[in-house]
Length: 470
Image (tube, rainbow, N blue to C red):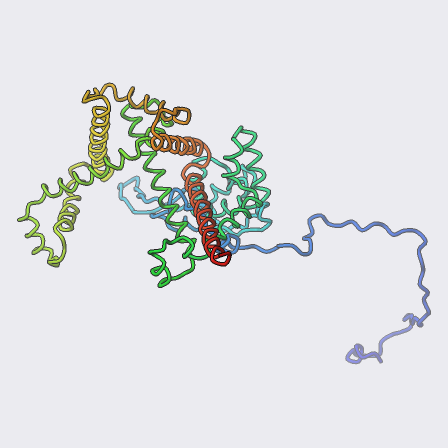
């Protein structure tokens, strides 16, 4: 009896059970071609980069990315680690309709965690992104188009992480070719295109130039040779680049601020003329700034008497070795809250202080200009109403300095260099702005240092070869 039937009561009926015997089967062969296999287009392909990557694994760690021009978020710091589109937390009240009771509350942006695919990087990147930015990204056509859009509002939306991703995208050859084609279609000159969007071949040439920065002994003088041997002999390129970029950024912001002051006082007709005049009068600005600092120190000296300084030392328990100028600054900081309250707000106080400082700087610059005019014209005074015409003549003289052989050689070379920098800054104001100026200044400085190192190496090789020939 079958094992599955042993527990059933009675005997099972098996009259109609058909028992099949094992038969030999033969394999049949088809003479026609089989139907083609249809592949599913949505099926994931084998191989390739199929995972989701965090931004820290996509952005190169060993590369130096230009500083974000708008700085980190100080109030809503989590926006520094995602694409928040300049959104942040807001605070307010829930007000009851009946009793008008106020209850504190806040509104936060709708932050999502999404894996977004980058066509240029060929990777899916996991990002913290707000729903508003995701909607904008869908309209633009994807992550790459959102990051590469070139206008001021979009750059403010990107934040530090978006800026780093944008820089990473712009290192890809296909993105570089696209940017160069767009710039060429807009009529940008080839020199600016090569400086702004260098090809991989140009980058390799720059690396070859930077190979001259291996040792510090190539760049220090004979008197500083012993000091260089005591320290680290390897030349710190990263630190040097940082100093160069900071210096170039300060120069850019200072020239732009001076140009806007000229424009506000109606001494020039446009921002471009203000930039040219600011570069032409660089020495006068430095002298005016030194006079301004001297007057600021004199103002602090008159503001606080020696008796007030002595009382502050006792009241604040300040050390005796602290100078009087530092004590005056401490007392000035103590008076700041009162001055802000009198001004009405912190912004109003800052505007008031900036206006006072600009007035002093303008007065000093005008005094220097009039003194120079009187010296050049036999003591004749320059009326303040003629300052605009005088500055226009200075700009015209600088523009024609290359063809004016009557000028002194040093003055002529200075004006030519000033106009070259002014024209470059005017061009980059319309393209990359501060970032382009800083990057270009760093590259030019490093190229000059490489040439200097190569010349010094050639001189040392010539000196070593001279005794052998003798």
